[in-house]
Length: 237
Image (cartoon, rainbow, N blue to C red):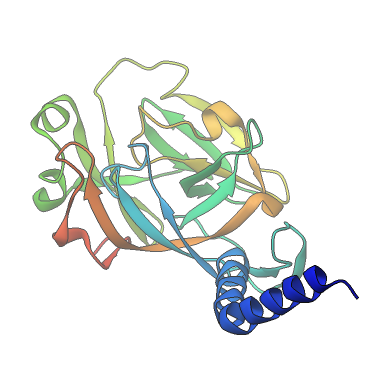
């Protein structure tokens, strides 16, 4: 056996002994993030005022089912998304990972008239939003938008919108959601690339449920941390 080969083999064996624990740790972390839980950066304002640009949200990938790592193949399903929950999914248009709120589930009939939702002919109710949430946004957005608590059944969440005349984006329907599909909307109703643009989302594209802001940085202020948004639940109180 050539001496060079022996030297190389010895170095590889030494490298493996020294770094195999790190290798296994990284492998476990990759598998964990693929199949169990992940944290996703939010680069756009489509879910304002609930989620801001720069938030890192925690996604529970076991909320609805168990998938084979790195695939969309289900091993076991134990639950389905409910109206009002925030989920991550892959867009059928360009395969980008998006985060939106579930509005319509299979069998629901959804109508929107000038940004007011009707689900199965029942209108969503709208109330005053906590001013603390509004103050997270800059003055321009505060003055250009109206803010509400939208209540659908027993679920409540924050929404923002611009007062305007009805158009194809803030008025649509009725849409009957077929089996195995979901209608998604962003909380920033006039600035969200959601089911109004990309269509209904099939169940197999949903990757998990978002529930907490782990930490946040302010893109407009030299990426300084927003301490008040660390470990912040996404559910409306």
